[in-house]
Amino acid sequence: MHSRARVAASLVIAAVALSCERTQQPASPDLSIALGKSHEPSNPCVADRDLDRKTASVEILCGVQVAGNPLISVAKGWFVDATNAYYVDDQSNRGVDAIDLRSYTWVGRIPGFVGAATGASGGAITYGGGTATSNGQGPNSMVPVDDHRMWVSDGNSQVAIVNLHSLTVESWISTAAPQCDGGTATTHFCGRVNEMTYDPDDQIILVENPNPLDEAFCTTAGNNCASTAAISFPTASPQKTLASYATFISARHPYRVLGRIWFADVKGTTEAPVWDHETHRFLLPVPTCSGATGATACTASAGGTQYVAVINPRIFSEHHFRELTWTQATMPSFAIPDCAHLMPGITPGTGMINDMAINERDQTVIMEVCGKGELVFNAHNGDVVNVVTEISSTDESWFNPGDRRFYVVATAPGGATPGNANTTSLGVIDGRTGLWLQNVLDVGGKIPAASDFPQNRALTTVTVPVGVDPTRDSTACVGFGFKGTGCVTVFEHEDDKQSNWGW
Image (cartoon, rainbow, N blue to C red; front, side, top):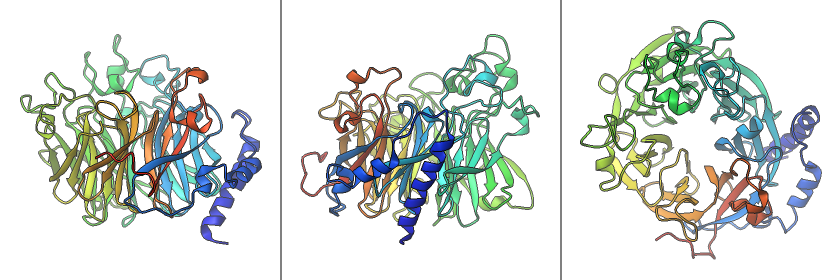
């Protein structure tokens, strides 16, 4: 049996076994029925097997339903070639969903994560999961390290190593730092682990701890630590003294923590890093300004700047723990121009710098900036390649080596036809030139990813608002018969459909 087929079969078997054990989860669909139906011509995901030109326009093709609670809060999507599956950090169901891309069905969930940051009563130690040992939401991000293992970040400073064949958690690793941990199992104030990336050459995982909770600040009467925003930008006294930090972990058992870097000049939270094999460096976005007005505005008049830290992983080793403090002035970095220079005439929004994706072949990186667009820059020196303003800023991006396209999901300025200004679209951007190519309507879409084999399909996860009346659901899932639940939407290059090209 082909390795992809073996993996797909193991996913289904694992999902059936797990569904028998998870009595608290909503009932899963009958997978044998779902898989049987998936091979009928009525399933457009399976029926459309043509291999269109990679340069053809992108069109929405089909939707895949996910079992359990409606998809309200999701954080990351990832395509893994070895398993031919799409994985979703599904905070609404406290797990990682697996979507098999041969049958285009949900085949199971890796359980055991904190879940969405809802129901918290406020205050530092109750933020997120609602208990002193689960601050911050999760799962938040993920990165595969081999054909059957993936690392997944969670709340309470935890990282899970999951087995993609059995859909189980093999190990948990704490990234809590002594400065914010409190030293006991009931005083974890380090917050969630968020974005991450992997250096396969040195087998080092970089994970971000963007919201360490300052115990002195958060336990002072009158201060609010009930949200990420409050933690990132405290205004009361005493001021927050703990900055975002990154933790470096060996991907070799027993998974030692090799060191930390604290970002002393951060304003907000560090965002998704990437690994560049050609330069042998981690690139990590660090915001040092925020918003359109005030002392920290990302404008030329306020001197607002941002930067990308350029980190050599070999400063860490298995034999000696190392802790560093990073600033733009003292460590290697790429300075990112302020928003007034990047986007003249455009008033910055919030979220001045965000997650990245890298095109290693052409050495270009895409990064959301200024709350209003995407910056494409050179991975060697940080030089601007292009600034995309045809689709607004988002918090996730993806590069597909199969069609050499960057994918983002956000609103389009002025609205994506036939949507309005608040309607989300899948944005398609050339990976070499950084030029915008197309917006495709994807109402409710988030967290893009793409498969490079065999059909170069893009995927997003569509969420529904909290408490939505299913009869009033207007998301992209409705067109595929899923109301009030959310779904995974699938996009494909279509040679015979040219109507939605953006130029």
